Image (tube, rainbow, N blue to C red; front, side, top):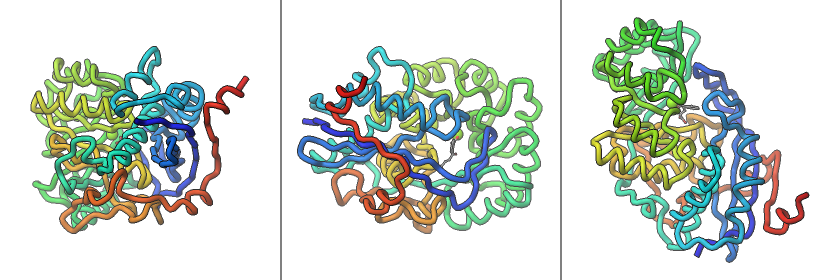
Length: 381
Ligand code: OSB
Ligand code: MG
């Protein structure tokens, strides 16, 4: 039985080892939002909320997520009995629109708690079958084509199985051409536009179609599936949707309309593991491959992503780079690493997350903390 008696929200600020620029903004530091659940027997389960500093990926931010978890999510979870973590998502969805990242942070921690109680690795509780996951790298926009070409070549030499480069208008064709030239014609290269184009950019989009890319991720609007269907008809390169797939119905729409051929599953964007598993299964039935994206998570969120990516239809390498790609030092022990062939190992020798948090480091880095209990909620005006 899952019974949570206390929820602790924490914010930590971790500087990125290098700035990360996407079409809609640049990040130099990640505001890491950790959610700690404490159950009736004193077990501690962790979640990470992927809301951003700015609402430039989705409408959610650290601030909106904090408020939603405090005022609307924790009252639905605290002191309530759940037999199974699958029961959590429907409870959070009932008459509660949106705020997927806030819901996911708690929902995913509930799965981790369940894995601890059952004494199984989280990956296995989710139905994962693989013990290592192919790893890709997501490279931010650079100052010139030569710089991105050098970074991409270095990443390929390090063993990354997929190179994703961020693009935006004006930093696209020349940049992709330079990278393709540096990597050779067969290297698995893709681009991610984070909504930077419209159908009026068809000339540019058709030129992107000539580079043998494994996919073009989210070229058009963040909540669109209709225009992506029109675009996919014009392109040979598969379109992959990220931002647009915020629930199972959006995945169904994408399949029915032909808005793309691949889905980037991020459990935070979808509202947790339960809807992510549903999208995974739906895609599998339709022969559509999926892969696990990232949101510059700390090692906590990465543990959740790696566990999910061990399911069979995650057949394309994920944005699951090792800790050192992002941080001077991660929050978890051991840190995440990648082998020379570009695989990250799924931790299968311990129940739950499979990594532990360095709690004194987490404490010393915490800049904001709030403890939620049934009592604290009652005491609120
Ligand atoms: O679109 O996939 C994206 C990071 C922040 C916001 C959006 C995206 C990303 C990434 C990073 O591409 C992937 C990673 O965590 O390595
Ligand atoms: Mg993306």
